Image 1 (cartoon, protein in one colour):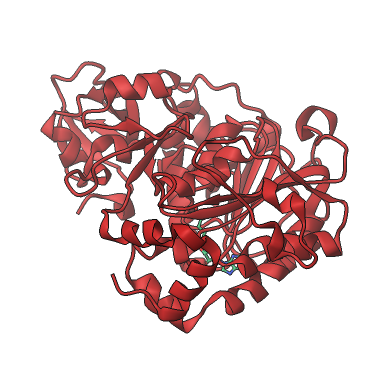
Image 2 (image 1 turned 135 degrees about the horizontal axis):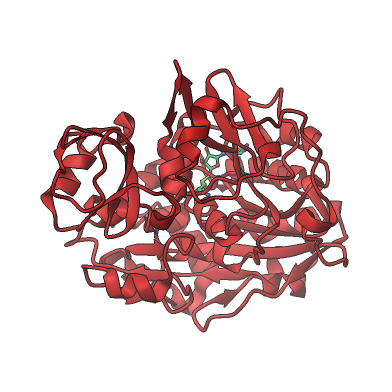
Length: 463
Ligand SMILES: C[S@@+](CC[C@H](N)C(=O)[O-])C[C@H]1O[C@@H](n2cnc3c(N)ncnc32)[C@H](O)[C@@H]1O
């Protein structure tokens, strides 16, 4: 693979004797990874169920390698059921090493398409709040879809400049993840187009953006909160020097140790002026040292106090919009076993939402979604949403049609076709049916005279 000369010179300076081993990696195939959605299934259960070969990624409890040259896990029904996300192994590390607790308020500043936000959402276990933001509205649409497929309902998906966000969320979040836009040097093997992009916009260009984002994020973090900064590039201007810039501006930020793995390399103390030994606590992932394409990560705490779990001690602003379940929806929700808090219901036009606790008013911010869209009120009836289907467990809803992943009707359902379901266990005429694959919800159908009218979201259908 042809690499830019200036890039090779720089890497030679960074790696010294290891440069030959690093360059040899470009002759090897790239790594493919799959991350289990622990919000839907345990790792053990998934390993039993998984129909193709996977091998554990040693530093990520819910991460696995698969042979991406031979297999297409994105075409399997379990992917549509949100049981896993496909992600390059080293890119799994930032969200994995940010300690998330259910109940935290977490901001993912640069979240699209959701590789880290989906993991954060799974680890919140439905408690607390995930604010997933991306400046690009087209990328934020993909982010929303991935969050919905994963069944994450305690969420706000925003599409805003971090500089504007900070006026709404001063010292608001317990945890913040910045997976910064970067020159992508760790992506060269995975995607050759990244080399050309690097030549157009290199480390100098991105470091200016990163400097601003990290300072804006710092102001949105509570005292005692944790911030994880990551890139998929090797240049010190985008990595250690960004951390150093933050600490010069806000000396209360302390660098924390990151849960180790034998293949991790230390950050580079000499990248700072004067050299800063603390930077050695930050982590570099190089492809010649471990089976991942390349990443940098730094974990920091703002001040000393431990972060407060926001929910019990500090309930969010009381919302005035809470209301009783509209009568059109009440009949439908009798079949759902959730205990719902009426105070969290919000009707906007015809759309009914279930709001997370602790979310502040986001009027004035560009957003794609706040809360879980439950469904829409039509003339005297209620249509449940795709997002609701993905949030449910099979046992949460009274009427389910469960098909085996080997049943060809699963693929026909995903393509949007009407299905013959009269002989399927659980079939019940004239009701909304939750269609499941091996017990995991895929979407809705409406039973009518022995057939199932397909209500799988048109934009998600298999082509
Ligand atoms: C490395 S990607 C994020 C990948 C994502 N975290 C994931 O794991 O799927 C960086 C993202 O930052 C977004 N971005 C670029 N400039 C930004 C800014 N100033 N504020 C917020 N997001 C920005 C880009 O649109 C891009 O989606």
